[in-house]
Length: 148
Image (cartoon, rainbow, N blue to C red; front, side):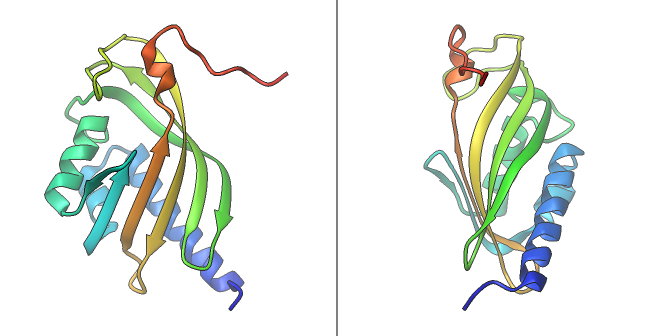
């Protein structure tokens, strides 16, 4: 069955609320967007309970307490829809201030490109957030080629 406009707008609104909570660094509001039965999958690493999801968001710098990144924000570049999900091409921007997944802090601003898949339940809560992110720019010298 094709996705109707009402469901498309519902998903956009729910995702916008989730990303706004992240960009506002409001950890309680972020956690309020997740269902009780949820999974967050980040580059193959699974977080299946609220406490581990909360810790992962702190680690990223999505809370007032400092994580590996400071001043983090997500920018949505493109959105796509499947029968079950909204898929976002996005960028994570911020400053690399702490060790992250083996990458030592650089103190530099960064831009990490990602694709994220979000699935919401009928009550409007996230049941699945799957993110695949290119961490290459954290390695130091390497920068993605710029178009043009």
